[in-house]
Length: 232
Image (cartoon, rainbow, N blue to C red; front, top):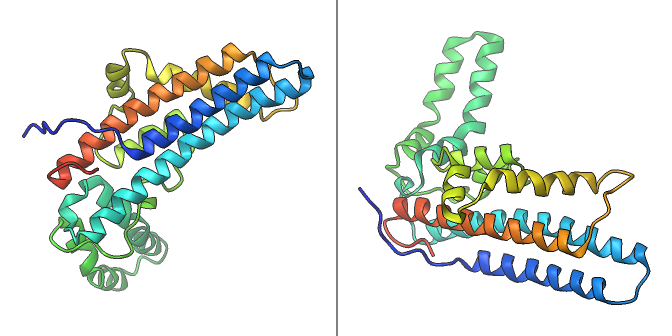
């Protein structure tokens, strides 16, 4: 069934854009003022690093708020995308399968799985979402905005081609934009960081702003479809 609820910008995207636009503005000030080149370099480098941190905060905030809304509305597990439910229970089930792989004690293994009735009910979506559910089920170990992490993170909510989706929205190569930004972010962590200009900072932060625009749209569409209405 098609989901046609009009997209609404999330507060989390607004916060991200305000924060990163401020970084561009601060970099422009550093560019215009007569200050030592070393100080200007630090301002430019800090802007890139802070923009990366802002993406992480956006991811954490949007999924934490989503999980909180589901629980406060006493929703059933069916309002969570199926893969997200699997990602939620994966750590609990992994220990049983890991133990069985080591001990080969099938009787103990079957008893342990039988004790996980609430887990199976959650997977089928037939029970109320447990209080232990939170946004980290989606972003755990995947909050840093690398290409691989975003692919896995969006896979957890049922989106297989996230960069193709974002590229269609922003009409640009989303994966290339992120790789370009991250190559600079990674280089800044080394002893000989690259020389940046104000235009470098503005272009790269503008690129990640467009990425978050696409991310926000895909999250809204995907989570709202399961929720049965606008998720924010």
